[in-house]
Each structure stands twice: as structure tokens, then as C-alpha cells.
Image 1 (cartoon, one colour):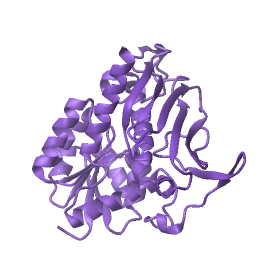
Image 2 (cartoon, helix red, strand yellow; image 1 turned 90 degrees about the vertical axis):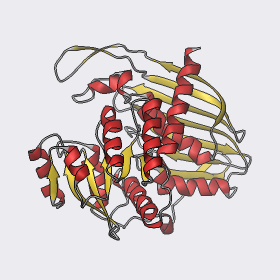
Image 3 (cartoon, rainbow, N blue to C red; image 1 turned 90 degrees about the horizontal axis):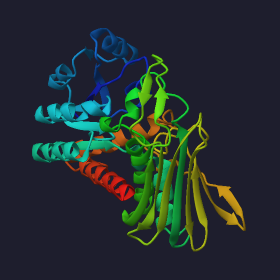
Length: 361
């Protein structure tokens, strides 16, 4: 294999996609990982993206991209219902795989993909980008070093635009069976960020998973639409470390109040927040604060050595994705597991199942 990991991106339409908004801008600035191919649903849209980012290969068929001999790794950035099929095809072709979260529509599909990846011995990573965020990694280190004493409680609130309108292209997010919905996407990223930051999962929990607005209208067509997924979520419990923790996801009117994560310890507090309208802790530019006096918080600057990406890649969403790709390249070069990987994804799928089961009691 070449020293540079050559990546094919599946799902990168210039009209608006995560592949174009995050992956391709990140890969364009990295020396060790390079995007060389793109696949969309049509040859002409794939070629437009390839030309815009200087990639030699463009495909209207993702299976053709997977089969191309110059592609070392496949990035799956399409809608969740297609994740399983594409991941299994890439694994069968012997390609390394970066798949966006959620890994699959449900836990059973996710386990199938994990088993295939483990059997093939390929490097696999899931797009839980909070674990690659320099700000969160630095905050995690501060907590571990005792900056706030022993952590006793933590609370993450994410208020985002989810109930004001069904924008064109977001209709499938209202369908619980799609695997892409309020609990799985904002919920999965938020719960994962909190538990990873504090280094332990929920020992016990209670939950509310509620749909408060069912009857909707699709903006693109004016057609009525029934929401079957949640728009309000509350998870509260005790982590294995003894920290009392909660996650509140508020489907709000536009644009929402953003993200705020508070961790309280014996000797102080740590606060991480994003501006109103932030789409999630995993893709937002964050600010970090620590207790500086009675009732006072002071901003904390993340040191330069916390970043691995170039100076030109210090804003999200590309920054966290770029950090993840560098870790992916480390795993390919070293023959070691990437993190977070498909096993982490399965564990998170299982946790979300547990949250829903508790909420139904």
C-alpha cells in the first residue's frame, strides 16, 4: 500500500452534502490522506465534485468506486439506510472503511457490519467526530488531571431546529425506521460525547423519548407528513464512575439555543458551549471555560500542540473530520485498530436501544 491513504468518497454532491461540507475540505489539506475518487447518484454530479476538488476519478455508481484498484479506503457519507450495503461491499473488496454515524439503521445491521470488518481485518472507523475534537480532548485531559477535582455531575443540553419545519431533503429524518432521526443523530452524538469525555458509560439510567409534534407538512411538496421519530429526549442517570449525568435534547424552533455541557467537580466547574443554532457538539466550534472565582468562569485557550491539523484547518465541521482522518491514517500505517471504530458504534447503538426500552416502560 502507498504511504498516502487514497480515499474514495461516496456521497459528495456539490448541492449540499456532508462529504462536500466536511470530508473533502479536510482531505484537501492533509498530506497523509488524499481524496482521489467520488461517487454520487449520477455521473455528471460526481464529475462536478471531482473537478471542484481536483480528483481524477468520478463515478455514478458507488460499487464502481469501491472496485477501483487505486482506492485504499472508502468513506461512506450517504443516508443511513444505505450504510450497511455499502460498508459490506467495501469490506468484501478489502477496502478500509470510514462510515458516518449511525453505522446502520439498527443494532442488528451494525453488528453484521462489525463482524464483517473484524473478519476481513480491515481498518474501520465510525464518524463520531466529538472524539476527534481537540477542544474536547483537551477538556478530557483537564478533567483527568484534576482541574475541577473529582467530577460529581454533568449535564449536556442540545437545543436545535427540529420542529419548526420539514426542510426539503429532511423528510426521511422524521421516520424512525430510517435509522436517521432525532435520537440516533443528535442523541447518539451527544450521549457519546458526554460518556467519552467522562470515561464511562451509564451504570443506570431513566429516559423520556417523546414525539410532541406528529402532524407535519413537507416544505418541498406541501404534502402532509406524519413524524414517527422523537423530537424531545431526556436521559438521566449515574455513570459507572459515579458521576450523576443527564442529556437533554430539545427539538426547538429555529435556530435553537445551541449546545452547553457542564461538568461540576469538588473544586470547580468546566463548561463547553457552542453558539445558538449549533447543529451538534460533534460539528460545532466550541468554547471552553473553567471556574476562576466565586461565580466566575474564565475562557480557556486550547494549546497549539492539541491540534494535529494544519493551521488552515481549524474550524468545524472540517477540523474534527480532519483530525479523525489523521487517526485513520495512523491505524492504516501501524496495522492497529482505529478509534472510534465499528465496535464503538455497536456499543452506542445498544445504548440507544436501552434508552428507548427504558422510556417505553
